[in-house]
Image (cartoon, rainbow, N blue to C red; front, top):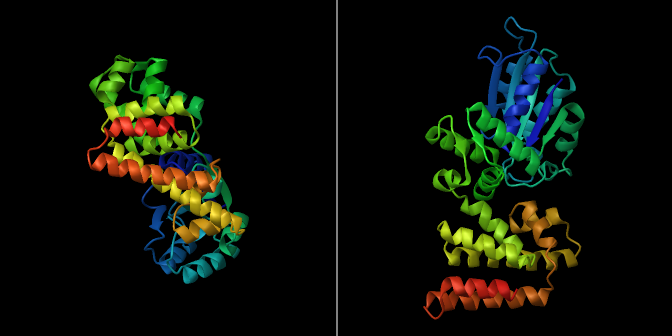
Length: 323
């Protein structure tokens, strides 16, 4: 049995990999596990390894990371790699577990990772067991945080858990790092919201993206609350203006291409950005004229702030209120 692991979080992918070992009653070891990075791996070396027998075990593992030929994210020529891996999978070694391991953290749903138009994608889906791991929902995320703290001999208030997620986002790797940092300072203690404020790093990038979506969805109250949080944690209003303008520009181009019957994947390829950003832009309930109007407003606001004619926070707040 061969596998393909698809995830939008590296920790989730690693956990799925551990589960495969457990189900086969195996442990990763240097004698029977080899990891290859598809970005620079020699396909002949991979095939030779896969066809060899394991050392004193029933199975050996070949893990191929970053198989970008399954996505639309690489311009590298993978023709030789694809041809040889397809030939191998037609008659694969039963004692070798071949695992394609692909993590794309910038997608909301793992179904968006694969380029389903490609022959190799369909082939891999037929010849391997595909394991898709989406980021956990809010309830699951909270339970993960509680269990992590309990493992480190800490307990935590519910509002403190919520605040961790608000500050860090839903990336499990980032959350794990922050939980361990808090526990390092608060050994065997109960964690409160004030502790999160003191020790947890605010993830500006994730929250700026969320704020832009809130503003463009006209969720004014939540936008103003998050704006205050971001400003308190060091965000410059000019950065927000730039990100808003970029999303509006993408939305305008997306509307124009959709009107010409381009698919979202075609548009993403043309604009050289991830398909998820096109998906978000396509859902924006703004007319073309309104998008252009707001782009002009942002350009004017940017000029007024840079020339000192308006307070940056006040200018951004007025923009949000008038969206």
